Image 1 (cartoon, helix red, strand yellow):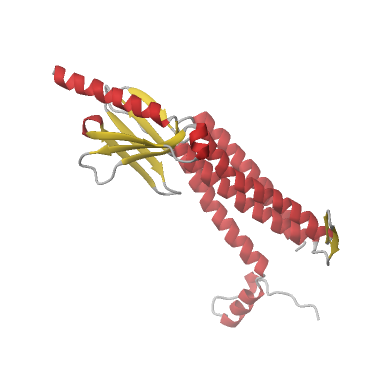
Image 2: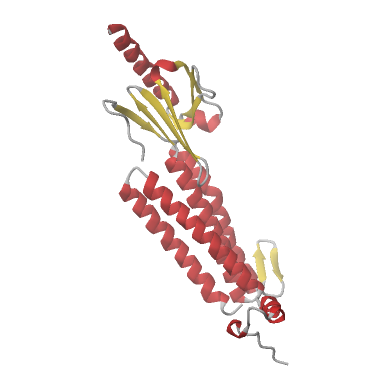
Length: 179
Length: 86
């Protein structure tokens, strides 16, 4: 759990687009379906196609089902790993800074905090057919002093996020000049 | 000839030959099951830790963990029940 500082106001929490989650899980679902299908083929010792059928010696039923379940368990762990990565990758925009929280696998977590007054430029990139269709892209926040910049990858509505950051920058600049 | 594995409690610490025989008798399935079990325990600890500590909504975290353990234990149950006959 990440807590903002005293007197700091939360503006928006950004996460990657839900389609990224869907397309990430899809291969696991497909392989699981194929595993279930192949289990039945190996147990029956026969495969039927529109062009005809083929017979081969059937495998022991228990061995096939145990192996299939083991493979599905491994796939399930993969799905959970992906969901955990997806859910815990977050960017928080407050009225004072942008915080990037990146989960890099298990036991590796990176938290970067970028103060608004250090931000130099904000760029957005939307590339490809599906990203354009669903308005998914990257927001690149360039900062002074940091060894690396902040990149919000595959977020929904990147142009809106850019506008929001720019508005916060303007407000921050206004308040500094007011002092 | 029916061959019986040496029961582990009959092996003495100094009985190297007995120990080697015992290790030789361990089936591939048992070793595989042990590796999978250790991996699953480490993975489960990690996933539980991350969702409970870093998750922003405790209700979502608990629901995800229930789903994770439910499916995992169901699959482990189906593996173990078939493993006895392999």
